[in-house]
Image (cartoon, rainbow, N blue to C red; front, side, top):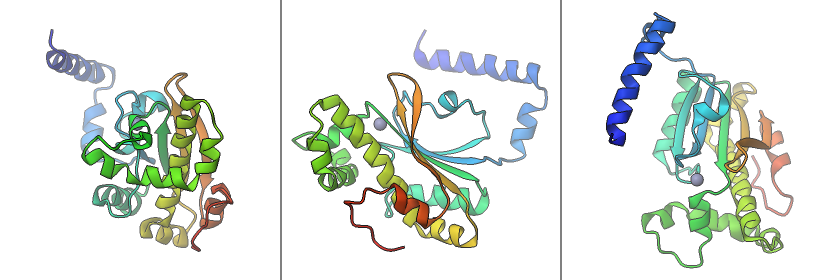
Length: 216
Ligand SMILES: [Zn+2]
């Protein structure tokens, strides 16, 4: 059976099973959503938001792109962020990177040969330059890429905290609370890199002291 046919067959059985188990399940969902978390992650097929976090449909508002980037010029992530914070009023935002990320590997390749993706990943090369000393000291290639994936998460958390949406939200009160994690595809575990950030003071604390920090 083709993958696509299998998807349709599964869907019919799943919808039927859900109604059998909880007759008003889809009725409730049709009325609207009130997710508690905005999840910003990589598009990688091995990073399945609900599966690895044990959340159900309706709990996570999700934005994904290659290497979980938060660009201040990316209308897609900014629109998702604005909607999640202003309309859905999410309590948490999770920025999730992962080890074994193809985007991280491509960005760190010696030669740019991936087309548009090379433009998209430009920020990762800047992160490499900012942390060159630390990265160069890691002799094992896989471990060096792991660390770059971690530094990328921290940088995206920082970028997120600099957006007008978050700065305004934090001026009104200390939410949403931002978390930065990396998913280990080798073990299935999430590792916390930046936890429970609810104001600019907390963000400064997670940034390496060697990096110049613009004032908030
Ligand atoms: Zn990835």
